[in-house]
Image 1 (tube, rainbow, N blue to C red):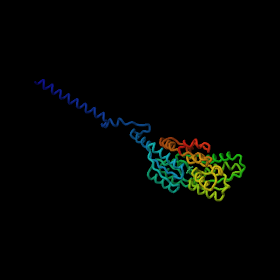
Image 2 (cartoon, rainbow, N blue to C red):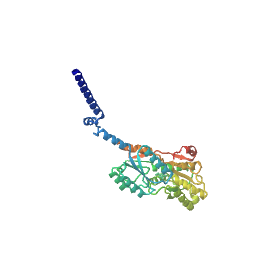
Image 3 (tube, protein in one colour):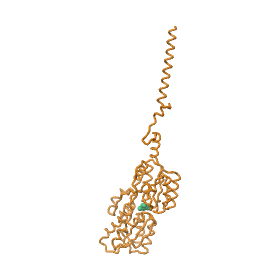
Length: 353
Ligand code: AHR
């Protein structure tokens, strides 16, 4: 009996020992033990621990991006807005969008509001070239990188923006001029041109004029007899063309419009006046929007110089590269082409904007 009791006592002791061991094992696995937790902390090259690095990666993954857009004045602009909005959202970033309705003061307000809201980055397409130094400096002081898109600013200090992604508007003007010179090789002149300019003070209006004049200025037979802004809109393009026709009527040989929307508005005015667009008056536009392809396929417009608005995905890549610490080129040009009437019918179904 005594032996039986001794054996039982040994068994109880053994069982208690096993329970103790099991409890120690589970504490190690869960890491709730202080010593284990501190041993598990990894150091990265820059001395950050893994948890801190993870939260940095998350910040780099999801950015808050403020986008100050010029307005909604043209087919081109609508396509450009959509391209940028879609690309930002598709990449999983948060977008704060502001339409300036072609007014500089609205853009300055929008950028200041983005700064107050502490966005990670600002995408900015300036209505006009000048007058943005102060607000760009404010963004820089707040450590918020600005990505200029589409239009440039006339500011000396290029440290105020991370990069500028957009078309070469001077080159677009040159292309328009070269096409006209070629087209009119056998014409004697004088060749009277009317010009519909874009928004006064905007980069595309200034540069497209400069590039065009550089080329046609090489031959005496070309003369710009009238030049006025149509603000990049169809309605204004039509209105100003009506005035041109009223004053110069049958003297007009060529219309050079700084965008297709104004050219399309002007085509309407020419038809209402009783002339045939693209026959009586040669029509040159810029942008290569669908509306221009339709007009060319209908035989009402001669040529459009491409200005590609679909650079949203390229822009988002650049923003992400910047946040990954890569050095960006200060100027990145969008590649573009030119399309004539005879290509319109075939290409129209393939046009994306
Ligand atoms: O800045 C690009 C220009 O702005 C486009 O050519 C025009 O259509 C738009 O409104």
